[in-house]
Image 1: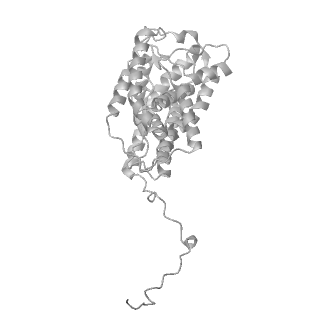
Image 2: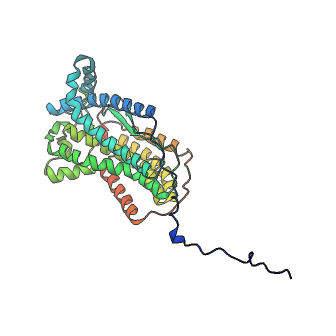
Length: 341
């Protein structure tokens, strides 16, 4: 038996773990902000979108002042003001400012949620488009993966909830300052007038603050019409499928249900498009955009979705917030958003 060595039998003194510095967080350090070139692009797109929204807001302001329904002809004439009378576009500023504020709040909700969870993302990019509402919305690009289920929920739910908070008082203002014009409930084919759908939230505000008035007869103030556009955009984003905001939320709650709804929602939109086109008398024109939206969502279904590395379940406050997003979707959704074109 070899002789014992006292030096080899000594052990280090126990370590006091409470005295050690806190463990480094799971996330990597905060990433740098997007590049200056990205900021310039975001500002340029914002200004272009402001121009198209001013034209859209001008035709809404003219229609409101004359107690008339919105008209595609008036919208096209508004664009001529850019070279005929640019100052005349200022009447469209209430609509443009309200709508851009709601969309910016929505995207900043996503942006700051990404910053909170150390997810690299771009600045909000607006999409200018000379349409009746002046824009196709806005978006941010996420350039790093979402690591946890809770981060996935926060990123998905923050935008719609924040945007909805900004849209509600604007819609209330629009209802309180609306005019009662029964003729706007029916499209005039000679003037290319437009009939806007009535979301459930607008019906609730009408019942509370304009009792006895048919919500189809309400000619909203341009601020309220901008809120209507914000609610419409929110309802599209909250569809529980794919990589939309609603898809992120549903995936964070239950990935299996998310996979099922990624097939169910496009099929349901096709059915809704058929019903609103051929079966429902309330629709005075084809709402064929549901077919296009269904095709886009179905195409997104085949794109690869990055895995979640930490699938920890949502805590009770987030589950309650998930329920709130469902309520927001229900009060914003419209089977026939626009008809009469």
